[in-house]
Length: 498
RNA sequence: GGGUCGUUAGCUCAGUCGGUAGAGCAGUAGCCUUUUAAGCUAUUGGCCGCAGGUUCGAUUCCUGCACGACCCA
Image 1 (cartoon, rainbow, N blue to C red):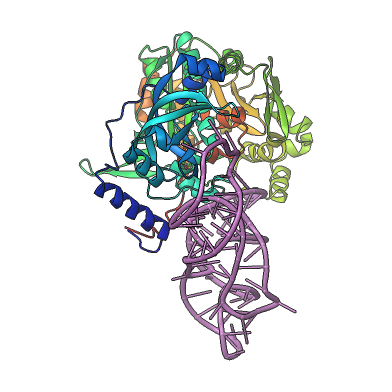
Image 2 (cartoon, rainbow, N blue to C red):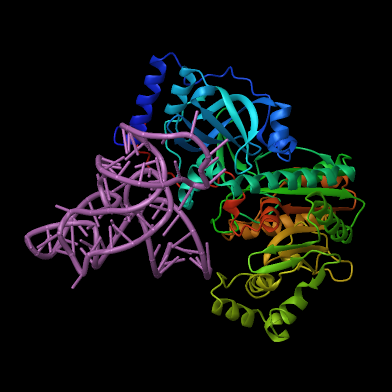
């Protein structure tokens, strides 16, 4: 233990003094019968006189968040997972031993209190302590009571402290849980089955991204943390599980910024005998369901500087139309790879000479169109070239039956009619393999078993992935993905003690 | 990967045109039996991120590094 910090030293001394007096600093035998929020709900509206008449006695436990002491009495605020409640401790109502303990308590300590409810002069519901039990001595001081913990680095690294002092973190995470529950409920109502497919893959596939590599010792093989569950979920559809979904982590070995964390949560689902057009309506309905479940009065939310209107139906925008009407490109630039390439260079996009025209256009779309898609917009009509797992459109074999959903300039979802033609899929894998050999580390690998599955027959199927973290960002008005992930990845920092 | 900014007490922040630093909260001691960021009095606490350079002297100026925030790729 470091000896430089006097505050910690002082608290350790206190802990030892308490032990000497026979007080256990880590006592786990206190039984609380009430939660703070329930006390406020059940008794908060009673008058001071009524409370005294009713003589409501209770026991609560929680962490001391405020401590105001004057001589022979004082107030504390203790916090449990539901709320906070004030404790009044006075000499006359406590045993000498408990009063001595009370005088030694620190902010941050966790205690149990038995006593009866009353209202103070200012009308605050309070427990007048008859008995105080120390449950956990805290030997590290909490951040300042008024400003809390501001340092973002510390907040992410020591999320436990952040959660203690910054209520909005817990609120966001609770809302995240509600959102995921709502999503799951909606899927189950629609007769989807939740499944878990492998996180460790022998081949990279299902998306365009660089993977993390790990090693299995006993088998002596490299494995990849999955970049997407797609190919496994579609194998399940082949097997007759015609409606499946998975809510789980994907891992992509890429940069980190406001919208990207190396591990992130996706909901992917597949439904047989439907086309991508079904998914558009289904996604709108899913959002409507979430809004209702979260008691969000209308279908509008504030996100940063924007007010976003989720009311149905959402805008549909053709990929190439978008390049023109939103991105301001002319037909010349769209049709002439050279011109598109030069424009992309001007915009400082990382394009290469040997990239296909469609890939360059996708970069231009990313730079010029996406940031302008604020209200929910389904972009449709993506080129085959950049959609290796999507079915071709019957009207135009260069275009797929695919869409992406954008909100507030962020990609939220990606879905399509699945490519179920094994011959076409085989060729697309071979094309990916070529790209990979040319040095494209994001291209997928050839998955022979997946082709075999398609040869058994994948029914016509529609599938979609929804980025859960970004969805939570939208609905909780957080502009950083780190604020909706409990433990975002941070570089290791040297610790000051062992 | 590039650019801008940041890193000072446990926390939130000042500050030093270069002479080794302050406040509030927290802590400690005392007074105080209805407080709400309780109050009053006194007081402890600092490798001023790390390493190097310039200088008589660096927390301050310069360079590099680490970590972070934001912007760009």
